[in-house]
Image (cartoon, rainbow over all chains, first blue to last red; front, top):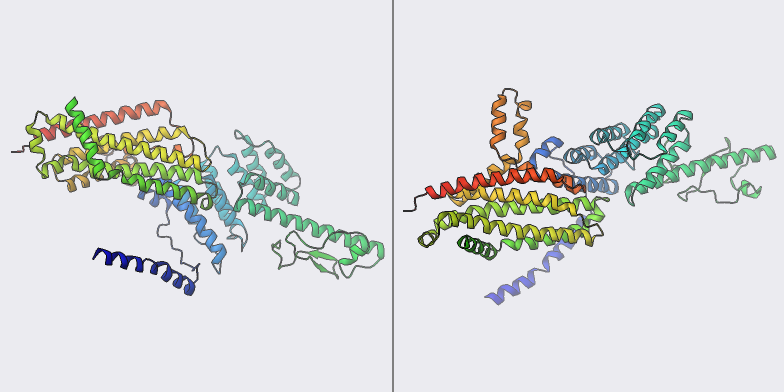
Length: 287
Length: 254
């Protein structure tokens, strides 16, 4: 009897991975699952885990990362509707989890398809972070950056960066950056400095990659402007606007390739003399 | 004293025979899997999450052991009638009761010590530091668990193991909501302040033993705070044990 049951077990065991493989083959290994949030209030979730709020925050944090990653890779509309409530629940359970504020703010603010394209909400998340962590100069620094990068509010950004500079341990350059914002608000150089800081401060991972992409976009825009200047230069020399960008090379004005930081060829409007990033390029973003 | 130690040693052997320490295997698997997976999933929060999981597991498994073994320590002996021959021997009820408490306390100590070692090893294996501040969260957890055992034993002197478990869980949950009780007037303004204050005072505040969140961020609990938590815990344990002893002595086993 016992030997018969053991044999049955040996026969049945391989059927589990086999049937799973059949399901995956038919339904797809990464089946889109409907994401549901049963509890929307961080305060309510907190009351469910007395004494285990930290662990619950970790669970919600992992769910936030999984949700965002899943939506970004597999969802059709990429609206990230649950991103903010997930971040809010996580930070209500653990108000000191700075990474959750920064991550949530970045991807709520970034335009589609990279993020939710709701910078006001991203800023609200950072404001909550700064309120809950009054000693954190990094959260205040990010808040200042976001006001400048996404809302173009140079004065407000400078004021927040100065507040950050007053906090113990704050980076020495915050005050200088605040002054630069007031002096030449709107300059691309300021955005570059902010993204460079975010790149330098981020550990390897999605936030660093996002900052790297932003820097590459700025590089591409700089390069397009530089090529545009060379087009104007050639027009001044020859008295006619070049019909193709390759004419810059033939005239000895440019030796490099005519591609952006993503490797996509620049677009060129010969009538206007305008060089631009093609919409199909990963470097393209609305102005 | 030697009789008390004998009861304690026997209780420890009994818990080991009941495979209570098997939870350590589960803990080891949990820590290993967490260590392997969290680096990828958590975006640089793996150290904090590992500490959270380790400390929460100590608290949760410890509470379950304290409740379910603690409530059986006395009541099962009564239900199985194995208590009668014991009390016929030169063994006082006090020695029996306190010996049982000490035995389970030792089981919990071993359990927590092995879990702490497991957590430290996982942190070291994943390239993190030694984190000596962990001890300042582990020690209050152990104190809280001893208080749970004391309550479990108190209830088990008067009722069945199942009912005693329900009452003990009730006290633990209420004690973890002590801060809500204190601020009751904010959600229910009609509650008289003296009532909220009285309930808050007579409830054992299990929040006092919870420093997991703080230590997960690498902050040690100050010695002064730990000293007062020790006083609070020892006083509560002593009160509940005395009540349990009185209750046990008043039981008529005729």
